[in-house]
Image (cartoon, rainbow, N blue to C red; front, side):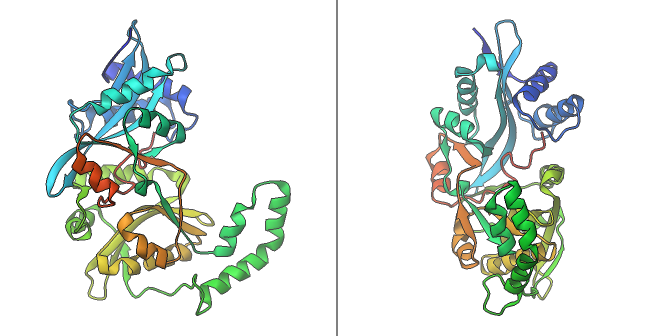
Length: 359
């Protein structure tokens, strides 16, 4: 009979080897680099909490056969601090699949945290989590997309066969003309107009300082601090497969901050939005600033995860909603926590769960 216990430093070589067997891709160049990152994330960082450890399932001989990582966070619910376990990297040795993953999650969910959260869960992970009593946060598992070059965006969905590639090559001049026209026609829903608001580099300190006014009205928000946010953003910038991470602070005519956005830029691709915040009366203008910024950099579209309160503005701006994963999965024994999420009264971004992590 195996047991579940807290992760130890001497487990890391086995956990790295298990990950290399379980996942085909890694942002780390070597097993040594991955072990060092796991040590920093789960054992040595100032955010680590021994009452909410990462968990290992070991077999009777003491060999690690399963793992789930925990990154402790802090949030604020109705003005009071709560503890959050952002969980990630659930993995089980092939010979121990079945109940081991369930046992790890059940053990995790029985911990002292007020909320457990993962926001990049695949379909198998979603099914496993639901069996343990976790639930899909449906509203926070929806994604919006705003086409910027609508003809190129539509053509991207025709497939990757030889005929499709030849078709795209043949019609490229017409597509370019159609997108240029769509960006300039006065009545076009895809018209691009230079924003009146100014954009500047977004320092972490500005996020922390402006956080209270940008998140006013939400029942549940992140309790931000500069060192942890710096670590999160530095890691997000390492996800080079998504492009270059751009951080933009938006100011009004007087120079006062009215919002910001953080997103990945890769020319001729879809830019993934990591975080977007604005004063309520300025949200549409900050969206317009993002769209123009991305259009100038040659993006085909931008895509982000839904913040339910902003749905009317996103709809007005011709954003398209979609579902189907990755899923946001939550677990809590507190009814008030779940109620804030279910009613769309939580302010959750891709900086709060596991999306930004670079394993």
